[in-house]
Length: 307
Ligand code: CP
Ligand code: NVA
Image (tube, rainbow, N blue to C red):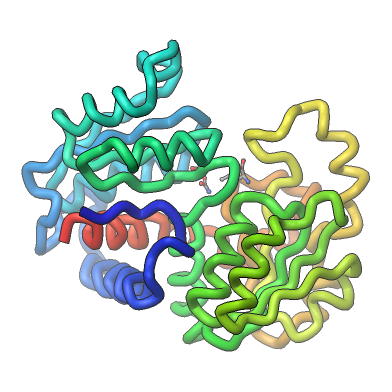
């Protein structure tokens, strides 16, 4: 049985297989109605639980649609409506759900919740975002980069802003897919050193910079995300805005990157804060391809889980 818990916990070979499969099944669906079934139905007669302890638009809809296209059925569960949100243990929840469903996707706060779910479930568990990582997002982002600009291996990715959960999964991907990465942001919001060292040990150049202009030189991809994540206290907003303003992605920064460099944002965006409107809607932006590829990449993840 295979779980998809993180990019650094899945072998590089398997990650490449998943990306190739995402590209192939996306191509095979060209022109098909959105609710039409795929030619192959790896989730036929399977039931998938989608648990959300935090809000979601993309993850929720793309998993739901993806399961249905592959012949399965879904149930979307809100953490607060479950006994899980009222004191039942994760271990008991995992063992109970495993008697009813064939796969569990969970978006939660603490990484420990995900890990315990995986430990006690007897069906595959997929990470739909924790405070620490967001692997499904970055699988879609790798697919998106490669569709536009070819293999990501050897390229330079620059992350601007908060070294958050999405940034962490990008660092994991740097190690696994063999690209370099520069993080540019304020020191208190640096990504976890453990992740940086792990990617470096795999041969990727991972740099930390305080200077947005210098960081984006030679970039093939510029990425940012919200300055205040769902798990951050609202009281942090003002301080973070002050710390992060120098790292806002604007046209001048994009112009310093390599020719043909792409811009990504996992969405939802706070237009005008971490990124200007003219970058979001500009020619280098591939934000809606990223959003679409959540569907294709996650279908490939689920297929890999049940194979
Ligand atoms: N990017 C992403 O995970 O979006 P949602 O929060 O809408 O699922
Ligand atoms: N870093 C953001 C990503 C949302 C998809 C958050 O965790 O809120």
